[in-house]
Length: 183
Image (cartoon, rainbow, N blue to C red; front, side):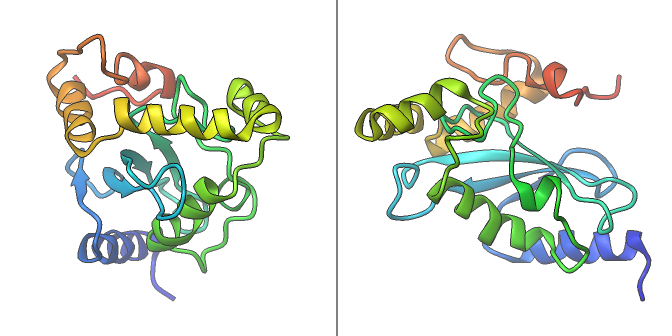
């Protein structure tokens, strides 16, 4: 069996060779950002998000940390931090899974089938249960405002150069998620 560091390298390389744009954040392969397109036939289909991935030293035996960098309106994503509540990542992760599974299966399933009865974003969960049409309209508004391809690129550029606009979601996610750049 290969070592965790070799597996990490293989999984990151596999993700980089797939259809996803991957931007490494540090010298190692532990932190990176992936462009993630919303799934077709969903209110999220027009959105492109930057998803931050942190791999623990014990990956693949321990799950990656996953968080949206730009805003998304979803019951199972914390609006302020971008943290994701997804059982397969948080509780039932297995070394059989890899990073491509996260972006080709787990996150699309999360967006296609939200769980409003156990929300991280109470407003989104409540709206989805009360008025699904209004919920989907708000999702589309968030996609238009925060998740256009150019907005996703701007979110990463602003987080790396420190200049934040009022329309940007990256104002302090690094602080909220504990992902601070090394000085």
